[in-house]
Image (spheres, rainbow, N blue to C red):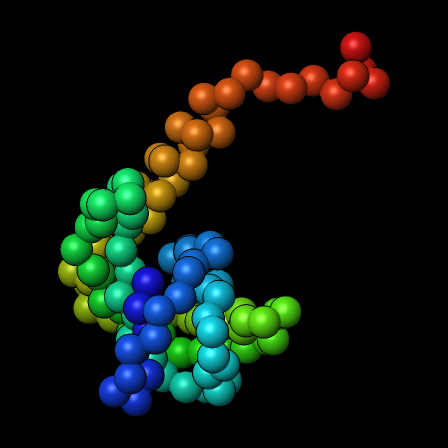
Length: 113
């Protein structure tokens, strides 16, 4: 993902994304309350990504985490068509996680036989 803050683009990695916002790791802090735009991209493999989906957001918290910063953002109101694109984006993520989750056989804790 790329965050756009006061005309500056900053790269980051998302930790999780939901309908209401996301959590991300960044190299530099962003002040709580700052309005930003976020370009989200799906990564299909090492060389292939989706087109960016730009969504408006506001930083609601920022915490130092070792040598980086973790931020939480809430999505700001957006047009209905952009909401539909975001939901499609999230459905793709959910399907991918579900497929990965069920790809492996369940592991039974040895204590329970």
